[in-house]
Image (cartoon, rainbow, N blue to C red; front, side):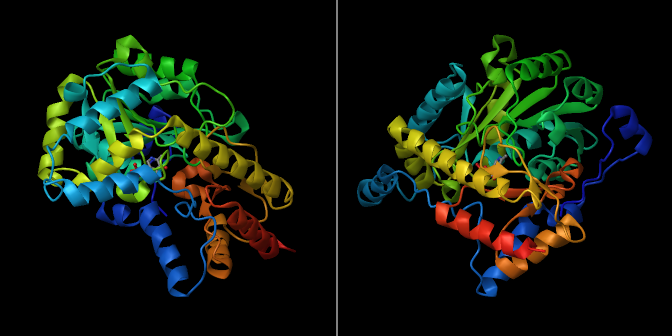
Length: 408
Ligand SMILES: Cc1ncc(COP(=O)(O)O)c(C=O)c1O
């Protein structure tokens, strides 16, 4: 479990607690990903089947992706060469078009788009360019832990913006404005969120955007789940506000929308002034994103929108099934339908000891891969994250096993 150093929710408390943070290699080593992966490895080594795992969705990349890669391997004389560090020009054009479909914002592929190895990479580049030791970055709690790790890796301090189940996991704007101070350099927001599925609405995002603009704070949007909003709420992005042109960085990925997490491909849409420093960060770290993944992404982005709709529909059916199963276990879980994303984030009523120990035991004994809510921040206390991206048979098997595990 990640060690969350900042537990206070208001700036005043934060200052009082003196929760200054040094860059901590130990904290990074304990990241959620490493811990979860280690747990999974142990199960795999013991020959156990893993159920409800985030990646085993059974969704496949569009066929055109494999065809494009095969064709390139056969005929593209440059297939073995790295690309321009900003990415293939054709892919940047397609990325700009996707960004426009998502936000309505027209951007110049040469001046605003960088191809990255996924959304995490895009946000990592932005934070590297932006942060110096002692800076602060506001993140959601519960939220995606790797963002906290990126902030720590830059010697900066994560400031947690809490949300609670009683409010549908929607964080409070007044609390947000109390967290912004002289050291705040950026805000990283994910909508729909992981693990809560909360969709940040137009009104909240507009108010947040205004505060960040007035304080010269960068707003970094993680759009990993943006194509999976389940309840018809509108997918608002601060890039839709013309006054935010120079203040928002958008990180997009094909990991979820096109089931391409293993291809490590996504892109950043950034203000003019950011393109060069972030490009340099790509150059000194990886030179470029692998060409083969860029060719794959180009084919995926050219896919018929029908593919995305099918993916969405199938996820919606899986969500309905998972909800039906979990709501039939009222003595074990207390839950609501998420607004978006891949996860249920119920309160675990039937924990035997701590939620963390219960979840570890569940995985060791049954292979069901559920994560404790505190892996996502202190406000996740008492909850667990359950992925419903898995195929329907796995969802049934996972819930059957949980029912048996928690039986009195
Ligand atoms: C909020 C969030 N952002 C980003 C990612 C990963 O995105 P990528 O594969 O593009 O780095 C995930 C994956 O779980 C996620 O939950």
